[in-house]
Amino acid sequence: MAPFRKIIVTSLVCIFLLQAADAQNKDWKKDRKISVLTGLSQAFIVKGFNIEANYIHHRIIFDYSHGASLDLDRNLVNDELKAQGVVVHMPFSTGIGIGYRLTEWLNVRVEPKWHRFEFYYDGEAQNEANRITVDKNNFSVGLGVYTFFQPFRKKGNALKGITIAPSVRFWPTVASSFTDDKFRYLNKNTSKMEEIETLASGIGFTPLILNISVGYTFDLKKGK
Image 1 (cartoon, helix red, strand yellow):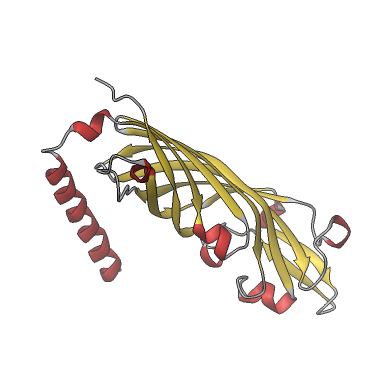
Image 2: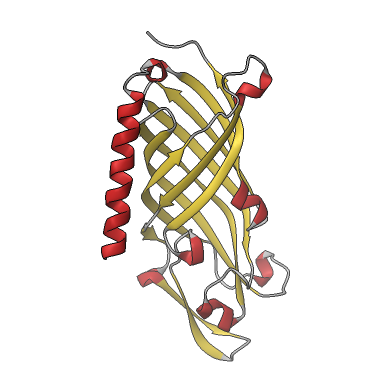
């Protein structure tokens, strides 16, 4: 626990220093912006797509994000599914968030999300006839820490809207359509009854998610 505690303390100190530095520049607290972003991990790691829209109003930020057609092949599933010869397809992962801007470029959000999971044997066509289970839904409520950079924001041309937004999120599952958080079935690869357990939507089916989103931000008239 000691390394984890050090990370938390260091993060809190950094946030305090950043807030102190931003105290001299209060203009960002009047921001009104709309951002449209897409996540890189969805495109390059799970061969899917993600679109996120943010509305920034002073220190409050609202978002809606939708990921589609996310494929977790045998290199991305956990050891249990790999042993069963099973891969995962997520038709969608969608939800909203509301957050608070700690500094101009750092914000935290509460995020309820809905995730759909489908399970297939590795190498088979992913259609309804080959699906191992009926569609399974997971619901998560978690926290996200987001950074928000406009590297060219001081330029007077179209480049100023280019936005980069790395994030760290923790989305634990709070409900699932699995009975008792598991599904038992006869696996045709092992010829045994196997179990598929409720999965989280993050790295290695844990609640942890790391991502970098890129997109464009449109400045609206600042509030008073």
